Image (cartoon, rainbow, N blue to C red; front, top):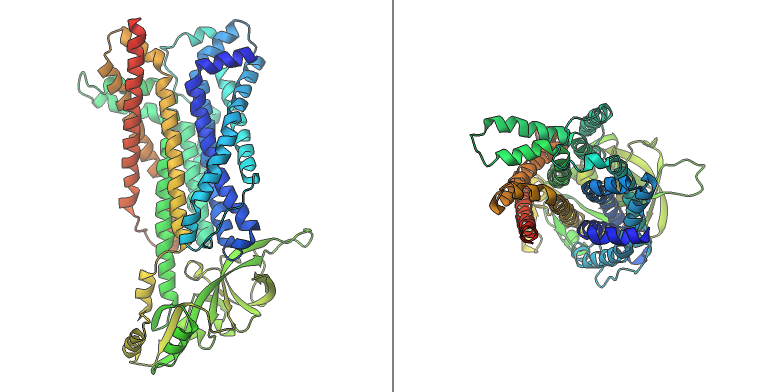
Length: 619
């Protein structure tokens, strides 16, 4: 067995190195996110921002795990598909299916010998590299040092090990079905016809994706948006199932429209004849396009909805930012001011409504909006109250809760909610339920002192708004109307950090797509060797590979964007009550990057392969 493993490693070194790189990157990105999750849960130095970090890292881990799992399993499956001839020939000389499957599993496990420590080091380096970003966005204190803990890396390695073994086992079932006589027929084409089970599975996944995209119309706020985002991944999964049929049908419909002797004839024939192989390129490129489009669009929709809710909920005449109690008091003393309230925030935790039989409590991290100066709240603030009244929000024993936070809970007006801030637990009675959770958060509480900094809301007496604004400006305090304040309010640190993490995910997904493309092109050496022997020049080979890749990348981008649009429109209609204004300039930049990477990868790899073939033919 070990002798066979060593020989297989030497022969298939490029494929194994590609798989090891994918596994290392997957472990690294998951370990980095898990390190921040652990720090947010356990590190006392992050007590004030731990809830935000836990929420941010948890959502990132979910998406990253899905992409990493798909990347690793696809990379391993692609490598095994290209080695079907080897396994068929080994089977012909006496190797049993069990022995070959053991060989595949041992090879997969051996990949983790270098990948696990390298991935752990990469994960810690990535986590440490994000410290300045989190400090700039006030999610980590100045001088913060991330604790060294092996648990996140070990957990990430364990997850990827399970994914890799499952992917190798599943792919080996197909690779080992090939008989020796069939393996030598390398010129035979692949059937694009799908089995009944696969067609049914694709239909079910598409229906599930469609239903998930409509969830924002049923579920409020970010809960519905999260379900809509899931629809994108479901539709990409459906693409993976029916990819061969889509690729073959596209090539079949384009070929009749070509002029005679077109340079597209051979690439389209290859796409039509090897559509299953092409699907391995379609899926990762489509996933990157879909992930970027859905994240960018939903971020823009949520930001727009939050600003609209904030602008609609600030019913004060003027609003501005204050950083001290002196600023708020100075405005309060100005002639013409009526009501003055400071809207701030504090990090805390809320006890989740749970079964009394559980032996432990579940505390959910939350950012609580705070109100200083409770007199006249209703004159400056209206977050869309549907039950109760903000006028009853007084003292440290009351709370207003959003309808989103109460979704799935039995709590209502008059019930109590356990809140923990700065280590102190208080039972607060729900006195109001409101709808504008994106603009004001899920919880509103009062703050007994008047020293809170944040947004100053000022209600003025009739015809005094302009004079109050002018006098406040003379004191160095900029006030403006509520609509203008909401429109100019910058995004929070959590939002900007999410954008950086999104680009990290996109870079990881693009690495996986490029890795898969290189493996597939390299695995076609025998095919291009045959074309060379019957007269194809190096220029023809390079042009064929590049054109095939461009067609595949364009098809993947179109399908990926199509998979993302239902989620974007569902979220837009639910949150904005109309067709959403999507950031098309940013979204369409991603296809340009994908096409550029695909073209460069195909060109470089095809030149390398053509040189190898030229050297081999000259011997």
